[in-house]
Image 1: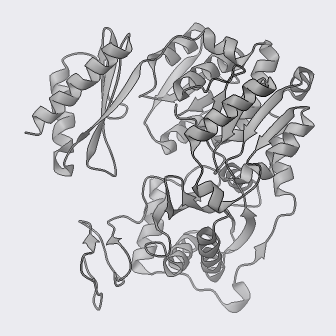
Image 2: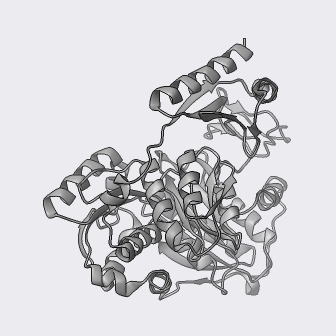
Length: 478
């Protein structure tokens, strides 16, 4: 729907159901929904402009009570700095106070959002997969992503431009918490057995990926008696944009072997995802790292269950069951995993892609917390990471995608349920259980594709199973 006096320049895309109340001149498209999978995202200064940022912040501020405090942070990029300033102006204009962390990692922002003095949180960052894009992420008072209801409320206010404008004396304030990083590190240290880690005298190689975690971890690891060879231990936008995880993994593996380190780690620039390298210098796959965590965590679990998405290898459930721990299956989304982590019985959660949640500290991904926890567990069990991995079962999960028009996604899912004729799990998508494995078909929420995951007893069996269901989906689309 186009509102009056709105101009749309040629070669622009307007999605079905979009409400366009401002002219689309420089923007690449008119979107049906303001929020995407992870937040509000788009090309910096093209789709996500200072004007949009102010309106977005005023809509968010209007959805909160006057006088509420919001924690806000950014990465080191100029685009994020520009947009964060616009967001702070919008929040203040709607009568909301701001706690400005300046440059901080996502977990630190979430942690401070959970403090009694704050009610919500925001962070502005370059998109991990495309440095020309920015993403604005919103957190609620628990430090987790805001709910879909919260998103819709902000979106309605944004589209109606129904913003609260306060009197001059009610304009919000900006404060800079002086001990934010210290609060985070003290609380994080309290989640592990510090004495056991100190006695182990770990030698580590840690690559900080030019991210803000480098402002936190060196001091904390030093307090725990670790001898750390730090790689890329400073914040740099240009270096972060050029960062290559595969190259960095090889380099850290080589440094682990050369230095005789007990463990290597790569923490992504946002501080949320962790890549592990064992004491032999071998880079662990995400499946191997998850199974290692499950094996170690379940021995010392503070809870009765762990939460894992439905596309994770069945070997993880078998490991947990061997320790007498239940597995709570979740949808394949960060929001679903965080919601499961909030349940009292859940003591650990992971998405199987380098994101680890330790609910006793923070119900969201935190690479620094995960690194500390793996050191804690290795110290308590007196095992090396290579030994742990050597005793793990092999996982054989494969993944394929099938191009699927939007209007036919429902047909594909219904047909797969009807064709299954056997045990079907409908937690997320359609998961068909076979005697020798499983297949999961799930439509992508943002792209015209269907994802297919499969696992059998061998890599060949998994590929055969995945290709068979991909072929079935293509036949349904003819």
